[in-house]
Image (cartoon, rainbow, N blue to C red; front, side):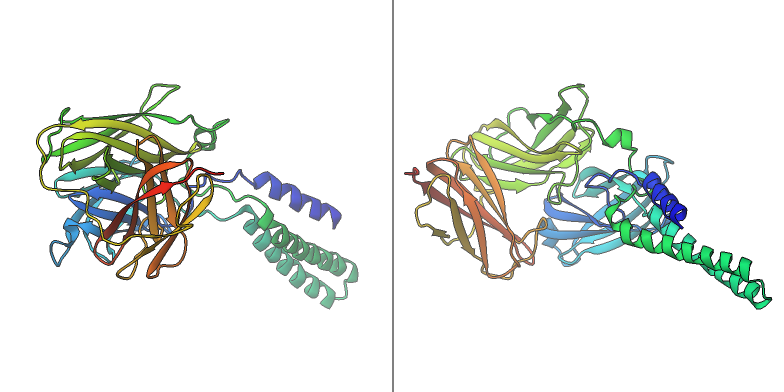
Length: 425
């Protein structure tokens, strides 16, 4: 009996694998925000229970062109396996409630999802993962099966008056049940193995993690003009190798969150750029007035952690109609009324209509120092309601520009305001 228990423990430890990376979860849905075709959408890639099998992809709309027509913005989808090269296509329409297209995948592992809408194209890398089951399940079911066979054998042997062999078979059955029971008890404490389709451990588990990405902002054309559309680009490079960074993971339901503000704070955009090539992110914008603009990108490399990249660009031309500054009236409630540097402040914002979760949260608060040297981003963590509450600690005294955001059924509401912060005493 002791030998059987020791053998079970050895097998369980031998078959156990290191925990998979935090972004690799078989059966879970992958949600990625995209600013594409004049719309703010979220792609929903449903978890795949089996391969070969169906792959359902939906498109949830939050703002923009997706609501221009009753039918919703058509989004063309193409999934390509990077292992076998097979492709499958479908079409889903962006709407408040996701419409799903059912495609088909033939294998696990790395794939690319090409998204086309409104004349723009995005290529999203993802992995098709299928849970292979834990090593402990083999021992549990194997032990119970063996116990059943031995028990039946013991009963038959005992029926013909062979007590010695019958006792041995009964003892074996008891050992099988014991092994299964021990595995049931200890299995929750053993890290699960990676699912089928996960990246090789040598590729994802680097000693010390990956270095932060180096980012370079640019515009096309090089000199944007107020009132005319331009493309803001972000090129990501690994500082150690010089190669494009193409291992971004979903960070609050997006590969990157891009905050663009004019130096005076009158222009504000919170968008989610498209991956157009390895290491290249792009988004189309239109600025309403000339001047200097600040760009801040929040992103996360696999096995690296979140980081914030900052840049700036200049827009020429003459002032035009306002764009990107859409906001709602109403001052927030601050507690204390005059925030103190380094101490938590509660900021309460009223919502005029029911709140719809966006980017996994009920609301977002983005805070920028007036000179643009600091940017903070926190979330409303409560259940959606008619009032949004944020907690934020301003790092130092001075004037801050802030924007509270939440989503309703068909658009994103932005409430701009300013806060003067006192020095701590």
